Image (cartoon, rainbow, N blue to C red; front, side, top):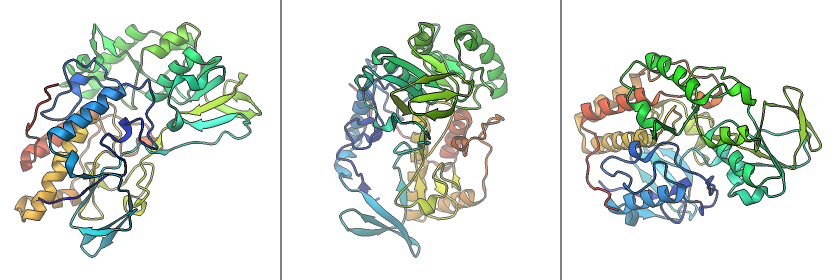
Amino acid sequence: MEYDHLERHAAVGGLWDIDSPGSPMYESAHFISSRTVSGFSGFDMPADYPDYPDHRQVLAYLRDFACAHGLTERIQFSTEVTALEQDGQRWRVTTDAGSSHTYDAVAVCTGSQWTPLAPGIDGFTGEVRHSVTYRDANEFTGKRVLIVGGGNSACDIACDAARTAASASISMRRGYWFIPKHVFGLPSDIVGGKGSFLPKRVERALLQPLLRLLVGDLTRIGLQKPDHKLFDTHPVLNDQLLHHIRHGDVSPRPGIKHADGQTVTFTDDSSDEFDLILLATGYQHAVPFAQELFGDPQHPDELYLNSFSRRHPGLCAVGFLETNSGAYQLFDRQAHIVAGHIAAVAAGDPRAGIFSARIRDDHPDLTSGLEFDTSPRHKGYVDSDAFLAYLIRTGKEFGWSPVATARNTR
C-alpha cells in the first residue's frame, strides 16, 4: 500500500536524538525499562547492550530498525506538518514548504515530550527553565540548584546536580514508590514480570512489602511517604537518587509554597536560596498543527486504544500513552493494529467494518482494577499489562499481529 512518511527532523530518532532541535534528551539519560523487555517485535535490542541502554544506544537501535525494514529511504526528512484538516471524507496535510496533499487516513506519531508543561514560580528572581533545555551536568557548576518534579527525569537530573552543583535539592509535592533498577541481580522489570500473571491487586500486595524491605523507610531520609498505592502512578526507577540523598549530596524538599527573590519557601516552612530552578514537570501531549482534532492538550481524548479517533474516522495516532511501565512494546502493538486497520479499509476487507464498530462502541477496562491518580497527567492512564494483553488479543483476532521480518544481528 502506498503511503507518505513525513518527519520534521533531519534523521530517524525523534526525541532520542539529542541533536534534534527541541529534543528533551540529556547526556546522562538511559532507558527506564531494560533492553530484555523493550524493543520492537522480531528485532531485539543487541545482546551486547547493557541492561539499561543509554540514549545513544537507543538511538542506534531505532536507526538500525528503520534501515532493516527499509523505512529510512521512504521518509521525507526535514518536512514539518503545519496543518491537518478534514477535506470531505479525506484528510488534507499541509507542510512548511507550502505543499498540500490529501489522504484517506493519517497516523499522527509526533510523540508526547516536545511541549513543556512549565508552572510559573512567582516571585523568584533567579534563573528558571524547563528540563527540555537541559543537556549535561556542567550547566550546574557552581550554582545552587533546585530540581522540581518527581518523575524519572527529575531524579536523573538531580543526580547530575549532586556531582557538579554548589548545592543540589529536589522538590517533590508528594511521595513516590521507588523501585531499584536491579533486584537479586536482575533488571527489576524481569523479576516483576514473573508475577504479572497474577491479578494486579495480588501482585501489588506482594510487591509493596518487598519494596519496603529493599528500599527501606524513605521518610527517614526526608522523602515523603507515598500517598497512593503501588502502580496507581508511574513509579520511579532510580537507585542513585537515594544514594545521593543518604550521602548528603541532594537535599529532599516538599512542594514549593512561595518564592521571594532567590529565596524559596517550601510547604514545611523551610527555606533556602537558589540560583537556578529547573522544572522537570513533564509535557503536554500536544499536537500543535491539529489540536482541535485531538482535544485536551494534556492528553488526547476520545481515542480508542489510545490510537483511533472516535470522532474522526481515518485519524489515528501512536505514542500518546501514559502507563505504569515501559511503553515500547505497547507502541509496537499499537502500530501494527493501526497499520492493519488502515490496510483493511483500503482493501475493502470486511474486518475493517467490524473494527470500525469497535472504535465506536468498545470501551474496555484497561486499569486491571487499579484506581489511578486523578491528576491531569493520568487522564487516559492504562495499566501496562492489561493494555498489552488487550492489544495482543485484538491483533490475533483481526490478524494484525506483528510478524518477525528482521532480526538484529549487531
